[in-house]
Image 1 (cartoon, one colour):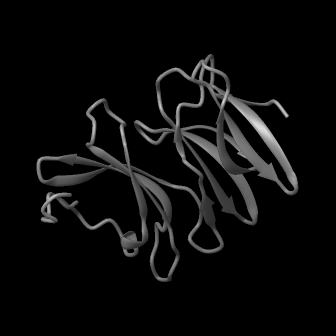
Image 2 (cartoon, helix red, strand yellow; image 1 turned 30 degrees about the vertical axis):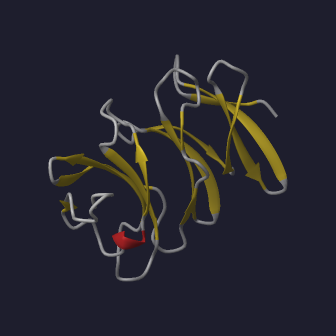
Length: 168
């Protein structure tokens, strides 16, 4: 992590794997302290590397970057991951979720995960994410996916148990 003004290093992490430099990362707010976390996606597979199709959360604290959690999303060989603006409050409850799609054995699925700890909440097989869209002024977001040539719209609910309901 570099200082935006001086370009000098602020923090360095432990070794995170062989192609971590190919990760795409974004600043996120996962624990209530602004500017302290980054969410990264790694979608690279070059043998003999492993753990290359995953997402992980890094936490900054006084000169140290620590991996808070890591979730393998797809197999290295033949896998893939996709996302469009992945961090969103899908149900409008103030808790952020991650919407990301993964491909394993030739089949896409879209998963919803908790940003805070990477826990998988719900998965919809056969769908690939296309982002989200606001549903009125209440803060709820609709999940947009595609399956083959059809677009689908889903509404996520975290309670009483995590679920996705297809609206169309």
